[in-house]
Image 1 (cartoon, each protein chain N blue to C red):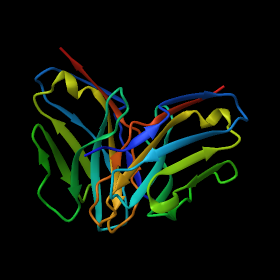
Image 2: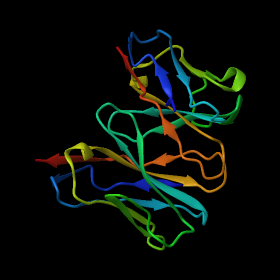
Image 3: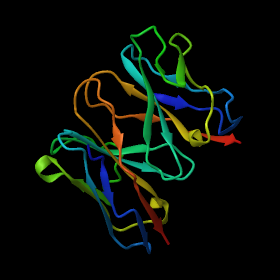
Image 4: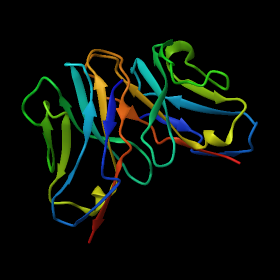
Length: 114
Length: 115
């Protein structure tokens, strides 16, 4: 079974530029999560989708971050414009969407904002 | 709000020895799940073990076991017969019971395994 796929693996941009990350969850997984992991900290949820609907985006900085999951499969996370403090690893995870689900993580995208 | 605390930023263990990583959490919920995730340098987060709060029996997965103390809100991970491949960052995580709830992570413990 293929795991969660993410691209790109690494990205370096200047502040105020825009960037987009892509995630393809495990086939059949209804729930998709985007986490932000700043160096030295645990991951923090940015947004959670159930199929193509948003379940939780309470910690998403909506003035600069946006995410979509069209057709309820893959998802993109965008930052526009980027700030220095957005430097982090962005992790995508998916789960079947059942009650006792385990979340499976992708390899992450490491973003450096200069 | 739920919080997860890992008080050991770094730990080290000799190969073949046993090490215990600590985790405490705070919640007012009675139905929840606890997890230990491992994140090697490649950064792929891998589930090590999970514990349902309603189960009194501690979870075990091969060399990995937990000591779940519900009243004390403590959830420690014991790694027996440590191997070089166990070296990684270990995160304790909490999830509220029911469907579609996020994971709340601790800050992690960096485990070094010495040959």
